[in-house]
Image (cartoon, rainbow, N blue to C red):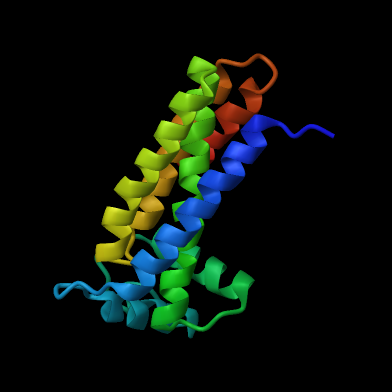
Length: 169
């Protein structure tokens, strides 16, 4: 039984990203971090407080819906540990999407691997300094938007790509 080198490569890169993300997110703390204020506003939103009427925020409702969905689906409370661990979701998925995108464009596993690693390091720089902030969703959605545009170039996936572009926007 032979294994696909793309799957092996993807698994190894995801494992490396998981380890780097885990230690980076759970062992560092920025002095300017306002993670607690975001956690309080997300917790109040999840308790049913009305956004903008009872809950002051500079951010749109998509961020709060995303946080509600992630915490509800995972069954986790809003704590520092869970906020940081849940930040691993976009940190692990976005580099895979970038690697897929580059693989589609270049058909080069080496370039796709470089894109994966580069995305991990760029995202870790943002996420480590401010875990749980809206930028994790914004970066992820931007990457998804670009990847959805790639789907349009394929006759087979064109309608899916168009729908995704509309939903993501």
